[in-house]
Length: 274
Length: 274
Image (cartoon, rainbow over all chains, first blue to last red):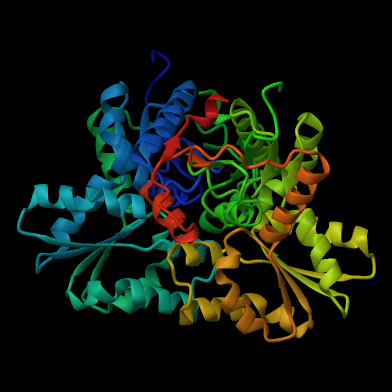
């Protein structure tokens, strides 16, 4: 812990590559920060797994990130934010930020008619964490939730602008539309990549909330409040390091499609050792 | 090892529930056999992960199955059969049967025009194991392979007879059709559940090969040849036990839709301990 300073990196983790959409927002909004990213590619996806399992995985990953002397941790995965954030925050001496609370807060601010939609994996939606957190902010708000398990594999097929994806989106979002939501939380890290299609299906007048962006904003505020923001004087090396639990070729390809440069130096670690 | 006898159970494992289609064939074709089934639901799917990771997972599972005194092991997962069967067979004193070789053999027998299609996960297809094994049998055969990563989530959504699934199937199978294959290997345990749709898309005259059925036949022959077939005198208890690494509700629901009875007594074990 004594090794941690404002120059220390931010630890970001996710079940796989999806969390890179969160890392990307941190890179954009906090360009002086160093990042250690971990993607649990050996055990992804998290969305269909139980709370107990996700908590065990998250603890292993946090132990690994602590060996990298991170100064703060961002749980980029919605499912892990839903299942593990509260417990982990109590167990770890570092600040821990998830994607759910920032996303819920902004959605509650964005709605005018008090009807918010939330889409995500089965784990996130089944946990009702967005609904519960939005209702804590404003008990009058109605939250309509829907798991969209095909969106992640469709994104990974790169069928982003595709008539099949459009039909899937129409089926998934049909109830949201008929219930007249005016804000929709993209509650899974892959979904911002379908943002334009989802926006088309939902129609104008519906605000799409991207928790990745909101989490980066919360991280920024937290770092400045606590005097932990990197002064940005140490520019001698590439500020991002990527670790995964499985080195499938897929990671690099997909990472390169999300980030604006080549993710060549990805290192594999045995996460079950932590 | 001395505890193993003809009365001992068969160990069957898969990344999740899909391998129950293999267990079901064993139940149908070898009704006197006891089965210990393990589904690695905490770490599924295997299809997008690397050989090294799948081999590590498979070794842990085999160690667990050996604590259950199994007399033989069936690797019900195509990806694990592709990546781990040869190595595992050399490391373990028990007979080990995969789904790939039986499936490949039957496909090679079924084709008349020497053109075979193989569909499966990215892992199975990328390993080219079906192609390589079919060509060992007959180097003249042309094998056309295609990964179909959306089929598993579509089956898990239960969109079995659905216009969206039909369009996905048409896109995936288009090249197979235009290349004129007359035998198609359903190289993933979930795919037999899409059998009728795939059959419609491929049209008459194309033989669909189900490696699950063929593996059960190979197991039967092996057991009789080695005097390991269960005489079926011990009928005092329910002959099937189910273990998983994650107890998500999904497993039971899906298992109950594959098997003709309730899979209530599923036990969770910590597979990373093995």
